[in-house]
Amino acid sequence: MQSLPPKTPGWLDWHPKPAKPRLVLPPGAVDAHCHVFGPAAEFPFAAERKYTPCDASKQQLFALRDHLGFSRNVIVQATCHGADNRAMVDACKASEGRARGVATVRRNVSDRELEALHLAGVRGVRFNFVKRLVDVTPQDELQEIAERVADLGWHVVVYFEAEDLPDLWHFFSRLPTPVVVDHMGRPDVSKPAHGPEFGLFLQLMQAHDNVWCKVSCPERLSLTGPQALQGEQRAYQDVVPFARRVVEAFPTRVLWGTDWPHPNLKDHMPDDGLLVDFISQIAPTPALRQQLLVDNPLRLYWPEDA
Ligand SMILES: O=C(O)c1cc(C(=O)O)oc(=O)c1
Image 1 (cartoon, rainbow, N blue to C red):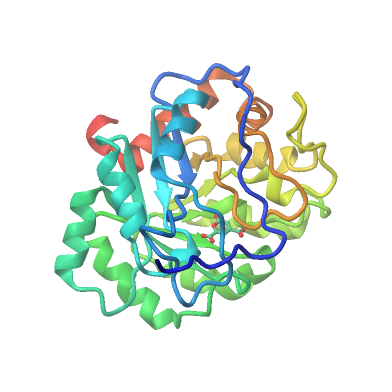
Image 2 (cartoon, rainbow, N blue to C red):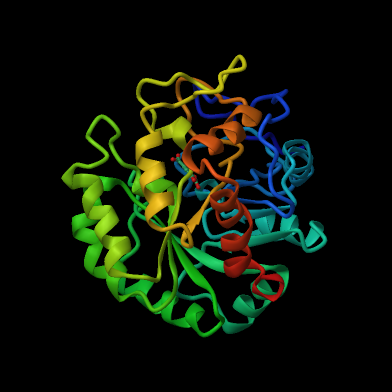
């Protein structure tokens, strides 16, 4: 039997026993950002990966979905699988229509491969600019991919660090699809939510009505906590002003996701039930939560049901 690669040193596995959220989610709520990892024995990780995670299977993801009270998932291709979308596609196909996917593809992807991804439930591609996660793909290659997937009605998900937005602004501005920004463009939350750095991100959304934002990953962005552990209902206070600004300014273009199984967290692994409770701090009214968790993700991923 082939031996499996060891996890990256210091790797934190997902929370084994998350609480039941206190927040009652609206019917039809979508966890619009989560991943599957392997299982490595069935779906090996990519040679070019920058980390080796624990396994996080589709069955475990669907069990979490049900436990937290979500109806559907959007499964985003994780960088540890490179452009080998088999684990994500397998999960989408097994979901009985309750999961859509976001893939990673290279310039040489064929039209038939794109069609097969579409049939499996894929509705977007992910472009990653975070240097600790991927080697840079030239922008002309990404532009070409964006133009091809635009014809399928897909969108582009982008992941980048706030300090890189000035350099990426022009590229993002020209993309011919909806553009969904992961994790609020990773603001440095030690800087003010009303300051120039986050202001530039808000300007991007203001200037381009095809730009959407995932108000996700407070556990990744927070510097001072408190962490979503041990029943904490007011977790990640330092992230709240950022996410709340986006939700209130652009209520029709925000999405939320758990980011389960939370790759590369270094200091703690959040309780996913308490992460769901965090939503009430950033989308304080039922109307905002209906848009964030149901109406917006349906428009993008299940337009036939919207
Ligand atoms: O910040 C991260 O480490 C991270 C990594 C990945 C991935 O490896 O795909 O996805 C995410 O949404 C976040």
